[in-house]
Image 1 (cartoon, one colour):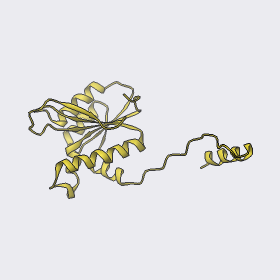
Image 2 (cartoon, rainbow, N blue to C red; image 1 turned 30 degrees about the vertical axis):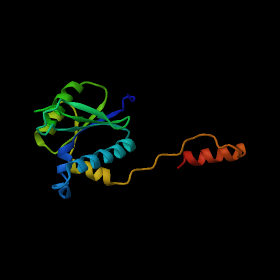
Image 3 (cartoon, rainbow, N blue to C red; image 1 turned 180 degrees about the horizontal axis):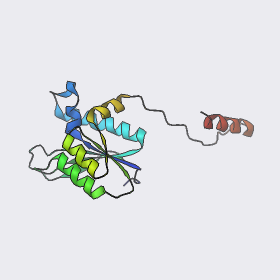
Image 4 (cartoon, rainbow, N blue to C red; image 1 turned 90 degrees about the vertical axis):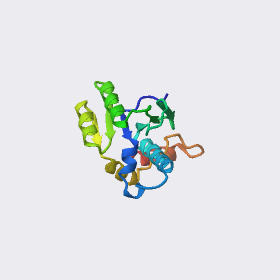
Length: 163
């Protein structure tokens, strides 16, 4: 498992999908996959560990998890369990830990409950907007440049640090 990130984001998957008007009707599997891919990119640029929670949606299956990347996990709740109930239980268990927790949902009761446990809240629309903004590019590594004179290498390092 990847090292613990400073921020953990828990996302109500179907709530976020439902927040986009153009996704109201169509292929739910495709929408889930698009959300997962978008959150993989967003989580990587933000340095977040992300748990995406999807309701069982009346399927008689047990809860199961899928690891998508080192920092993104997807949970399909067990039969009869809702994402809201799962997120509420997760927030209660997470309370008091030394890690920032962000809950993404537009369900008012869910975000009020999460806030009661000390979690921050982000609306589903706000998440879509954040994922649509261009993310800053990471800096190139500070490895020494081989083959250049030491003075040029030093000048390049200084230039990179001032960017």
